[in-house]
Amino acid sequence: MRVLLDECLDRRLAKEIVGYEVKTVPQMNWAGIKNGELIRLAEADFDVFITVDRNLSFQQNLPKFNIAVLVLRAKSNRLADLQLFAEKIIEILPNLEKAKAKIISLDK
Image (cartoon, rainbow, N blue to C red; front, side):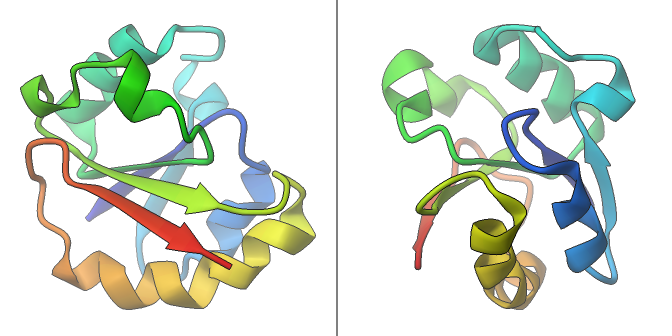
């Protein structure tokens, strides 16, 4: 399973998601690309897109995309706050399939 981390997430979170191929938006040279285009690019190569952008589902017509979207409801996008989600992310990833706009919010 291939996972893409949004550019608003600390890139070091990728090291916390053990056992999966995790890339960041900047690693893909997609930094600065707006959400609609970014998700279109991501769906071709990734199974899951992880973000902290709570407005994503309101800004985009997500059902047209073939990628699971995981929204982390963290206090901030600092690594210390994001690390709290690592275990839960690893736990749910095997149950996610590349699906039309499957939006899952994780709270901490």
